[in-house]
Every structure is written in C-alpha cells, then in structure tokens.
Length: 115
Length: 356
Image 1 (cartoon, each protein chain N blue to C red):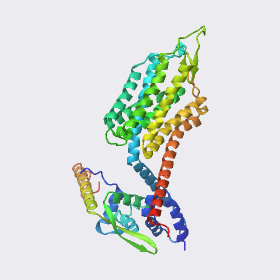
Image 2 (tube, rainbow over the protein chains, first blue to last red):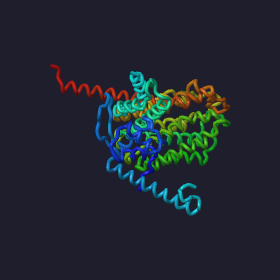
Image 3 (tube, each protein chain N blue to C red):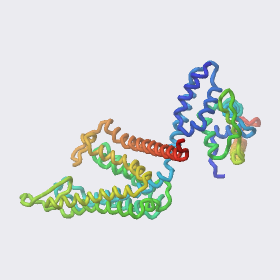
Image 4 (tube, rainbow over the protein chains, first blue to last red):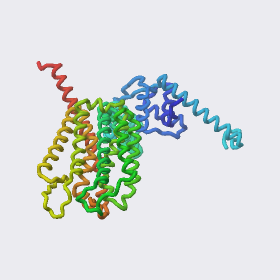
C-alpha cells in the first residue's frame, strides 16, 4: 500500500459518501455527526477536498438538482474511492490495535479503554 | 429577503478562486454557504471569509503551478536550463581567465588573486551541469545546479555583512543559477533542449556563445603593452582595449554578429517557447540592470575598495524586482495567449457560420 494516509477531512468526507450519495451541505452536516460535533467543515475546505477527490477518481457526480433556484450536486463514492477508504480503515485499525496492545502490555490502559 | 446581499458578498469572496474552479463549483458553493447562514445574516462570517480566501488562494497557486507542467513551459525550461548553464560556464571560465591573465591596466593591488580550488570547482561544476543536461541526465544536471546555488549561498551570500558590494555584483549569476536549477528541475524528456532548438537554433546559440566568449578572451590576450611614455596609440571602449580603432570596430562587429545570432536563434523557436524563454530569463536581465544602474550604484563599488551599507529599500528592490518581473511576465503571457486563442476561436466560428 503506497498511498499516503488520508487527512481527517478527506477521510470523513469519504465516510460520509460511503453509504449514500449526498450534496455539499448534507456532507458538512454528516461529517459533523460522524465526528461527534468535532469537525465542522467550511465550504472552502469541503470543495477543495471534493475537487481533489474528483480529480483522483475517488468520487463522482451522482446527479444534479435545482432546489430554490440553487444548484445542488450529489456526489457518490467510486469503486476506487471505496477501496481507498477501506485501505485507510485497515491502516488505522492496524495502528490503533498496535497502540492498544502496547498500552495494555504496559498496564497503561484499563479494561474500559481509557488510561 | 436577506439572502440577496449575503449572496452578493459571498459571490465577491468566491472571486478569489481561479476561473476554472468557479465555473465548476461557484453556484454549488454559494448554495452551501447560504444554506449554512444564520437567519437574517447579511455578511459572511469571519471564519467563512478566512476559509474562502485561504482556499481560493491555494487553488490559484495549484492552478498556476500546474500551468508550468504544460509542454510549452517544459520545452522552454529545457532550453533555458541548457542556455543558463552555458552562460554560467562561460562566466566561470571568464572569471578564471581574469585571474590567470589579469588585466594589465589594473594596478597590482587591485588584481584578482590566483585561482583556487573553488574557482576550478565552479568551472567544472557548470561544465558538468551543461554536459549532463545535453546528454539527457536531467536529474543529475538539476542536482548539480542546485548544489551550485547552495554553494553561492554558503560561500558568497553568507559574507553579505562584510562585503555587500561583492555579493550584489554576483547576484545576477546567482539568479541565473536559480533559473538554471529550477528549469532543469522541471521534468522534460531526455535531450529535449537539443530537439527543441533544432540544428539552426543549436548553430545560432553555439556561434553566439563562441563569439561572445571569444571577443573578450582575444582582447585580453592581445592587450596592448603598458606604455608609460604614452607613445603608442591606445583605444578603449567599454572594457575593450586595442592599439587601433579598426581593431575595436572589429571586436564590436563580431559582438554584433553574436547578437544577431542570438536573435536568429530565438526566431527559430516556436513563439510559445520563445516568449517563455524571455519570461524565464527576464528576471536575470532586470537584476543586471538594477545592479548596473543608480539604484544600486550607491552600494556597489566595482573596484571592491570599500563597502557601503545597503538600505532596506535597495535590498527589497533587488529581491522583489526579479520576482515581480517573472510573475508579471507569466500573467501577461497567459493573457496574450488567451486573447489569441479566443480571437482564433471567433474567426473559426465566423468561418463556420457565414453572414446571411
């Protein structure tokens, strides 16, 4: 796996699009939910990531709608995007498991999972 | 409805983005920004403003940087890298010759010392850059050129406090080294410069190089003997010295041929490459003019007898002028080519749809 790790906003946006196609504002709200209110994306950040993901072929436009005379574009994950997200999940899980094991061996992690 | 002034203001902020990004996302982003606005909000929030301006500027930089990977820039950079390396090799050679056969008119205390290892290394280094670029070892050439840039920064740039005049004297060569290194860093196919130049271009620039180096070398080696009695005639013109006016005119004529050869070489290039070559080398030309004009004359003592402290404004001019020249050149070139493209598009449309 030679891909560099995904940055958090990118990871969360791909996660938001994993289940169903969503438009820009819905992605912002979903990312806020996924991150337990920790990551509030702004439009500039969102569209910088969406543009890059489209260019890399990880997402594509699902459909376009006009709501209250404003363009609403829905994005969905491509097969490549799904693979990339799955790879990233596996990488994070491996790292998290390794950290977990070491903390347990050192006696720094209690059964509940907090030090 | 409060959305109108807010939409107008957001649209104004979105103008920070490059045109192609706006074409793809402006309406959509506006919808997202308005959907996230508070009821009654009429102005963009500070957070949104900072975020949009930052993201827009980054997008512009990305688009600008991507532009330099266009084939025309890559070709122009390949040619520029070779020509700049040739110039730097010639400058290193001239500097060495100046030490081996010093100007007899210059009194001994002002004559340069004998060449040391650094002088030979400089000559060999730029020769290696030139050869590597010509045989297709672009990465080796770029690496050596960046090593030359770093060497200047360490050996010369670091002495700016003690000898600012010397540092400024060598700034154009440093700028040329940066241009050479940057140009050779752009990924071009092996030996691209020679293919772009073609036989006529290679011949023209080769001839210009030989003549431009040959004249001062021949002049130095055939200097008139020092004649304290002043019995022999003596002619001098911008560093050229000769026992007869005809010889001075002969030198000038050869330099004129060299200039024509350069112009001919440029004319053989495709206009898109020719103008990019000019844009890439213009910052160095501006720096040469600045160093040789009154702006720096208060600080530069060409005989290196004393060092006059430089004011910040002069340093700023020496640093900013080449950068601004380059950026202005890039912008003007893009506008020129965009205008020409649109005009050509309009002409094609006119041809396809004849007037009734």
